[in-house]
Amino acid sequence: MNFDLLRFSPGAYLAPVVDWLNKNFHPFFNALATSIETVLGAIERVLLFPPAYAVIMAAVILAAVFVSWRVAAITAVALLFCLFAGLWTASMQTLALVTVAVVIAVAIAFPLGILASRHRGLETALRPLLDIMQTVPPWVYLIPAVMIFSLGRVPAIMATIIYGIPPMLRLTTLAFNQVPKEFKELGRATGASPRAILFKIEIPLAAPTLLVGLNQCILLSLAMVVLAGLVGAGGLGAEVTRGLTRMEMGLGLRAGLSIVAIAILLDRFSKGALQRRRTTGGASTV
Figure 1 (cartoon, rainbow, N blue to C red):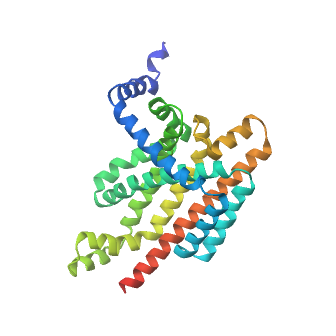
Figure 2 (cartoon, one colour):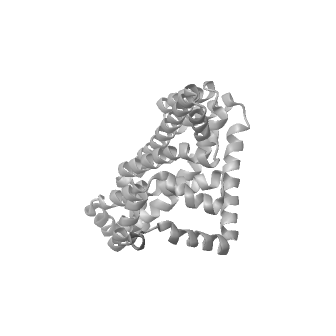
């Protein structure tokens, strides 16, 4: 029996689709890549143009003013570790890349999660797609991204965005589904508009779960950093890859710990800022 007829090769169907996209949407992809490179380059210039100690001092002051002194101390330790590890430039490149990827991923996942919580049909339709996105090995996302955008930072960001969307979208949907109906009905009874109910009732009550989603999005985006180094994205991922290929344990360990430092910094800063905003917002409302 000839089993060749029963074999299934997804690439045989996906490759023509990618070729068609490249041929018919090349100006769009080029404009998108240029926009991402422009934003990413601007953030990197802001982080790398001043002296490292000036950037660290500014970050500590911002953390102390907008979050807390505890987060400010964590910020100082994390950034000083990246500096003394000799990986300041790579760390700032990674910080810029992850920041852009997380912002875009949240901008896509948050409204989709709200819509999914309101329309069961959309949630049902998104569930298998999200299952596939979370099950497929992350490096697989780099293949079509490189085929469309070539090597560099843009395919790394696109793959990171795709990898970071599912947890944020799922937890956003869960967060809004868990908001007690009594609070929403109370808002409608008092004559509040749907916009007011969303921002004054639903989002504050859903904030704890939303913070978990943001945390997962950040951590998964940083998990893509090492793989992004394989396609020329630079940053700490390239240093980890260099340490692996050269069998330099010291370089790989320093780069890996620097990624951990960036992860802790982003997690504490974002969580603290959102929690403080929720607290002050609740106090002002009262």
